[in-house]
Image (cartoon, rainbow, N blue to C red; front, side, top):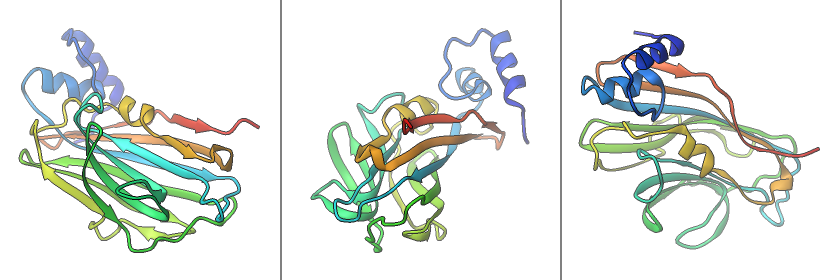
Length: 218
Protein backbone atom coordinates (compact mmCIF):
# COMPACT_ATOMS: atom_id res chain seq x y z
CA UNK A 1 0.00 0.00 0.00
CA UNK A 2 1.38 3.40 -0.97
CA UNK A 3 0.83 6.40 1.31
CA UNK A 4 1.79 9.97 0.52
CA UNK A 5 4.60 11.50 2.51
CA UNK A 6 2.56 14.69 3.06
CA UNK A 7 -0.43 12.80 4.43
CA UNK A 8 1.81 10.71 6.65
CA UNK A 9 3.49 13.83 8.01
CA UNK A 10 0.09 15.37 8.85
CA UNK A 11 -0.81 12.14 10.66
CA UNK A 12 2.40 12.46 12.66
CA UNK A 13 1.74 16.09 13.58
CA UNK A 14 -1.80 15.41 14.70
CA UNK A 15 -0.61 12.83 17.20
CA UNK A 16 2.28 14.99 18.48
CA UNK A 17 4.87 12.28 18.01
CA UNK A 18 8.08 13.65 19.54
CA UNK A 19 10.70 12.24 17.19
CA UNK A 20 11.33 12.05 13.44
CA UNK A 21 13.95 9.51 12.37
CA UNK A 22 13.01 8.96 8.72
CA UNK A 23 9.65 10.05 7.39
CA UNK A 24 6.56 10.88 9.38
CA UNK A 25 4.49 7.76 9.01
CA UNK A 26 7.38 5.38 9.72
CA UNK A 27 8.34 7.04 12.95
CA UNK A 28 4.77 7.66 14.03
CA UNK A 29 3.93 3.99 13.61
CA UNK A 30 7.12 2.88 15.34
CA UNK A 31 6.70 5.33 18.23
CA UNK A 32 3.12 4.17 18.72
CA UNK A 33 4.36 0.59 18.92
CA UNK A 34 2.17 -0.42 15.99
CA UNK A 35 4.80 -1.19 13.35
CA UNK A 36 8.56 -1.25 12.86
CA UNK A 37 10.64 0.11 10.03
CA UNK A 38 12.23 -3.02 8.52
CA UNK A 39 13.49 -2.05 5.06
CA UNK A 40 15.12 1.11 3.68
CA UNK A 41 16.44 1.80 0.18
CA UNK A 42 18.57 4.78 -0.86
CA UNK A 43 19.10 5.67 -4.54
CA UNK A 44 22.52 7.25 -5.14
CA UNK A 45 24.16 9.03 -8.08
CA UNK A 46 27.87 9.76 -8.46
CA UNK A 47 28.97 11.92 -11.40
CA UNK A 48 32.68 11.89 -12.21
CA UNK A 49 34.49 14.81 -13.83
CA UNK A 50 37.95 13.72 -14.98
CA UNK A 51 39.37 10.70 -13.13
CA UNK A 52 43.07 9.96 -12.80
CA UNK A 53 43.87 6.25 -12.95
CA UNK A 54 47.51 6.87 -11.97
CA UNK A 55 46.60 8.35 -8.59
CA UNK A 56 43.35 6.35 -8.28
CA UNK A 57 41.31 9.52 -8.01
CA UNK A 58 38.59 10.01 -7.03
CA UNK A 59 37.87 7.80 -4.02
CA UNK A 60 34.34 7.92 -2.63
CA UNK A 61 32.72 6.51 0.53
CA UNK A 62 28.97 6.18 1.17
CA UNK A 63 27.67 5.22 4.61
CA UNK A 64 24.40 3.82 5.95
CA UNK A 65 23.41 2.96 9.51
CA UNK A 66 20.40 1.40 11.26
CA UNK A 67 20.98 3.94 14.05
CA UNK A 68 20.98 7.73 14.35
CA UNK A 69 24.79 7.92 14.53
CA UNK A 70 27.88 5.83 13.74
CA UNK A 71 29.00 5.09 17.29
CA UNK A 72 27.73 1.52 16.86
CA UNK A 73 26.93 -0.59 13.80
CA UNK A 74 27.13 1.04 10.40
CA UNK A 75 28.15 0.12 6.84
CA UNK A 76 30.12 1.73 4.04
CA UNK A 77 30.42 1.28 0.31
CA UNK A 78 33.87 2.30 -0.91
CA UNK A 79 34.13 3.26 -4.57
CA UNK A 80 37.36 3.10 -6.61
CA UNK A 81 39.42 1.96 -3.61
CA UNK A 82 39.54 -0.19 -0.51
CA UNK A 83 40.75 1.39 2.73
CA UNK A 84 40.91 -1.60 5.09
CA UNK A 85 42.46 -3.97 6.16
CA UNK A 86 44.98 -2.57 3.69
CA UNK A 87 44.59 0.07 1.02
CA UNK A 88 44.23 -1.07 -2.58
CA UNK A 89 43.21 0.81 -5.75
CA UNK A 90 40.01 0.49 -7.73
CA UNK A 91 36.93 -1.64 -7.36
CA UNK A 92 33.96 -1.64 -5.01
CA UNK A 93 34.12 -2.74 -1.37
CA UNK A 94 31.56 -3.16 1.41
CA UNK A 95 32.51 -2.76 5.08
CA UNK A 96 30.69 -3.28 8.33
CA UNK A 97 31.95 -1.23 11.28
CA UNK A 98 31.28 -1.03 14.99
CA UNK A 99 32.36 2.50 15.77
CA UNK A 100 36.02 2.65 14.73
CA UNK A 101 36.39 -1.13 14.60
CA UNK A 102 36.11 -3.20 11.44
CA UNK A 103 33.71 -6.15 11.64
CA UNK A 104 33.73 -7.60 8.12
CA UNK A 105 34.55 -6.71 4.52
CA UNK A 106 33.46 -7.85 1.06
CA UNK A 107 35.24 -7.04 -2.21
CA UNK A 108 33.89 -7.42 -5.70
CA UNK A 109 36.29 -9.40 -7.85
CA UNK A 110 36.61 -6.64 -10.47
CA UNK A 111 39.16 -4.17 -9.07
CA UNK A 112 39.29 -1.93 -12.15
CA UNK A 113 40.32 1.70 -11.58
CA UNK A 114 38.17 4.55 -12.89
CA UNK A 115 39.46 6.14 -16.10
CA UNK A 116 36.35 7.37 -17.98
CA UNK A 117 35.63 11.11 -18.03
CA UNK A 118 32.05 12.13 -17.23
CA UNK A 119 31.22 8.67 -15.92
CA UNK A 120 27.94 8.33 -14.01
CA UNK A 121 27.65 5.66 -11.30
CA UNK A 122 24.21 4.79 -9.95
CA UNK A 123 23.18 2.24 -7.33
CA UNK A 124 20.79 1.54 -4.48
CA UNK A 125 22.03 1.02 -0.92
CA UNK A 126 19.74 -1.21 1.15
CA UNK A 127 19.27 -1.93 4.84
CA UNK A 128 16.93 -4.79 5.72
CA UNK A 129 16.08 -6.73 8.86
CA UNK A 130 13.83 -9.67 9.62
CA UNK A 131 14.17 -9.01 13.34
CA UNK A 132 17.16 -11.29 13.82
CA UNK A 133 19.34 -10.71 10.77
CA UNK A 134 20.58 -7.33 9.52
CA UNK A 135 21.53 -7.07 5.83
CA UNK A 136 23.34 -4.29 4.00
CA UNK A 137 23.75 -4.51 0.24
CA UNK A 138 24.33 -2.50 -2.90
CA UNK A 139 21.98 -3.41 -5.74
CA UNK A 140 20.94 -2.30 -9.24
CA UNK A 141 24.28 -0.59 -9.76
CA UNK A 142 25.72 0.59 -13.05
CA UNK A 143 28.97 2.24 -14.09
CA UNK A 144 31.21 2.41 -17.14
CA UNK A 145 34.13 1.06 -15.11
CA UNK A 146 32.47 -1.97 -13.47
CA UNK A 147 29.36 -2.44 -15.60
CA UNK A 148 26.32 -3.79 -13.76
CA UNK A 149 26.81 -4.64 -10.10
CA UNK A 150 24.55 -5.85 -7.31
CA UNK A 151 22.01 -7.47 -9.62
CA UNK A 152 22.52 -11.01 -8.25
CA UNK A 153 21.78 -9.96 -4.67
CA UNK A 154 25.10 -11.34 -3.46
CA UNK A 155 27.00 -8.05 -3.01
CA UNK A 156 26.02 -7.83 0.65
CA UNK A 157 27.03 -8.17 4.28
CA UNK A 158 24.91 -9.78 6.99
CA UNK A 159 25.08 -9.77 10.77
CA UNK A 160 22.87 -10.32 13.79
CA UNK A 161 20.51 -7.41 14.36
CA UNK A 162 20.91 -5.67 17.73
CA UNK A 163 17.74 -3.59 17.67
CA UNK A 164 15.61 -5.94 15.57
CA UNK A 165 14.30 -2.99 13.54
CA UNK A 166 15.45 0.14 11.67
CA UNK A 167 13.37 2.65 13.64
CA UNK A 168 16.39 4.85 14.39
CA UNK A 169 17.50 5.07 10.75
CA UNK A 170 17.85 8.57 9.33
CA UNK A 171 19.15 9.69 5.92
CA UNK A 172 21.00 12.46 7.77
CA UNK A 173 23.59 9.89 8.85
CA UNK A 174 23.98 8.68 5.28
CA UNK A 175 24.54 12.17 3.92
CA UNK A 176 26.72 13.51 6.74
CA UNK A 177 29.00 10.46 6.80
CA UNK A 178 29.35 10.06 3.03
CA UNK A 179 31.59 12.00 0.67
CA UNK A 180 34.67 12.16 -1.51
CA UNK A 181 37.61 10.84 0.50
CA UNK A 182 40.26 11.78 -2.06
CA UNK A 183 40.51 13.95 -5.21
CA UNK A 184 37.22 15.80 -4.78
CA UNK A 185 38.18 18.00 -7.75
CA UNK A 186 37.59 14.93 -9.92
CA UNK A 187 33.93 14.56 -8.86
CA UNK A 188 31.11 16.70 -10.23
CA UNK A 189 28.50 15.59 -7.72
CA UNK A 190 27.45 12.96 -5.20
CA UNK A 191 23.72 12.88 -4.45
CA UNK A 192 21.20 10.84 -2.50
CA UNK A 193 18.25 11.07 -4.86
CA UNK A 194 15.47 9.13 -3.16
CA UNK A 195 14.75 7.20 0.05
CA UNK A 196 12.09 4.48 0.40
CA UNK A 197 10.94 2.86 3.62
CA UNK A 198 8.84 -0.22 4.38
CA UNK A 199 7.09 -1.04 7.65
CA UNK A 200 6.59 -4.52 9.05
CA UNK A 201 2.99 -4.58 7.77
CA UNK A 202 4.20 -3.88 4.21
CA UNK A 203 3.20 -0.20 4.16
CA UNK A 204 5.66 1.86 2.12
CA UNK A 205 6.51 5.52 1.61
CA UNK A 206 8.93 7.47 -0.55
CA UNK A 207 10.99 10.55 0.24
CA UNK A 208 11.83 12.27 -3.07
CA UNK A 209 13.94 15.01 -1.51
CA UNK A 210 17.30 15.19 -3.38
CA UNK A 211 20.19 15.50 -0.92
CA UNK A 212 23.43 16.91 -2.29
CA UNK A 213 26.39 15.40 -0.44
CA UNK A 214 29.04 16.98 -2.67
CA UNK A 215 28.93 19.44 -5.56
CA UNK A 216 32.00 20.67 -7.48
CA UNK A 217 32.31 24.43 -7.53
CA UNK A 218 32.65 25.65 -11.10
